[in-house]
Image: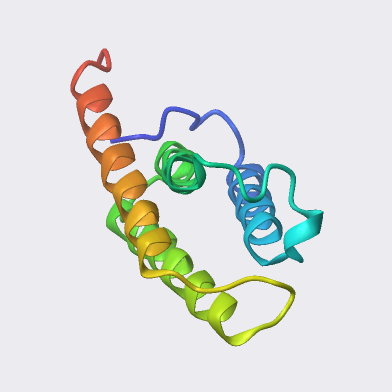
Length: 121
């Protein structure tokens, strides 16, 4: 199946995905006081939403091997939690954050799979 945004040249689709990855990396690895909304009560929902949106961007921009997009985003989420546990800056790795990331990724994949069924041929 062709991607929804197949009319956009591949380098631009890749750049859009990498820009989204960059935003996620900044928000998850920057010093805690620099992150907008850090310490808010809906932290786990924010993790799910962020990684879900990143997954959707990757799935809609991808042309094939979409399982690799899901695996890459999941690996990023796990890797970020490990990195947070190893670095300073007031950040700490948390398995609950990794679980929230995973839930967002799975929900995004399910939404994408449902949307794909309704795409006109």
